[in-house]
Length: 293
Image (cartoon, rainbow, N blue to C red):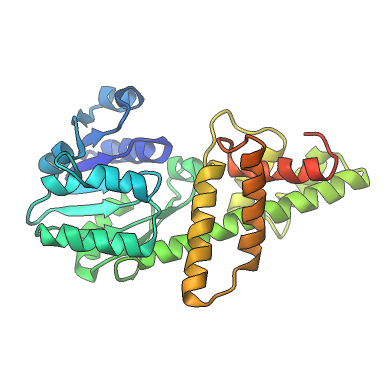
């Protein structure tokens, strides 16, 4: 069993820690708000007062935070993770940030004698709880092989996609499709509804049709009732869409459906729905269509 650290105990991070604890690993954790981690402490997770303290205590450190600014907040400074790393330790960043930022951070980690991989995931809290999460990994092959057993304790599909930063490029390529699919699904539902088909029937048909990706199957019903807590809110999704558009610009790859869908996310924010799950793009399109939720 491994001696692990985990920084960022939000919806996804906390469930990952729960799985690692259930696998018998020792986990030392840190979160800005300790109260959110209390249930994990009650299950045996050790608490640390700073990211640095986590890194000092653990051999392999994981992080799952919202964006590049949050990543800098947990890694930099006297209480940051970098200050606690030393030779032979590992850092697995599961956050979705730009490949360039991640590569620069990996260089800082290696300057400490440690090593880093980027390991973003594909899936939701439901797929994580069901043990169906997919993990993409960018970094040295030998480091990947050493960390793979731990990552398999989080999700059953773990793929090495190449050097540092490339797992993030892959994650961005995946995530742009989530919002685009949700908008297309919303178009279909509203066309059916305004034709006279009850929304519940249209949802049932589409989530059992050829267009029903796993994401549509578990998020499609959100057009009937949004969950109490967003699985992946508008701000988080728009962050990933902007990363996709920036990557497309850098690589000369047009991303027209990403750009259009991003405008619906901006509209959702303008309507005050930024904290709702990104499936709220349906509500934006419904309002434009003259349909009440």
